Length: 242
Image (tube, rainbow, N blue to C red; front, side, top):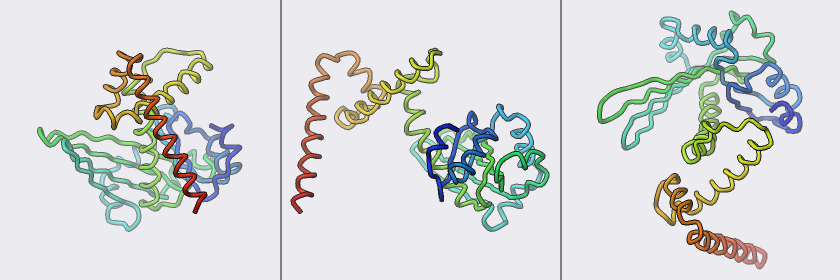
């Protein structure tokens, strides 16, 4: 990630990353070389920082006090057929106690995401918690947007790849093989998403349908691609004519 960030201009952008990339050098590169801001997830690889931030937000009465302060808390409720999900975002610039604050480039705030999922049928609830180091100002709305967009990417690509291809359980170690197979899976995912509307099934079932009868399904896939290509070409010609 550090190598990639050196080639990007991230002015007026917030770079989000999972815990694997929550590193002091990554934060420095984002700020100094890419000229952006960051919102980095904390987990066990930064054990001390993770535990300190977790313990801070667990202080009795802290969250309730933050709920009362303008700009430090935001809440969203999402209702689906099976569950009610409440997402709460807390962010603060109270970091003077954080011993490593000077070692994280431009660290301005710490954030906490609390997601409560309640199953409608049973009434059972469980809570998911995530913690972040941020170079952004302590504005809950901005923090919520950064976190939400990061998980949109996670859910639309990485989570889908794991569900459809069980990517997280694959045991390949050789870097080039992992890279090449990843490219193939993403190309296949594009085809599956394309055909999902035609079959009217989940992507996992579409993969199984194509996998069982590739010799009969391939002509159909090529026909759909041909139609899309032709329509795009005609649209381009119409635009040029205008």
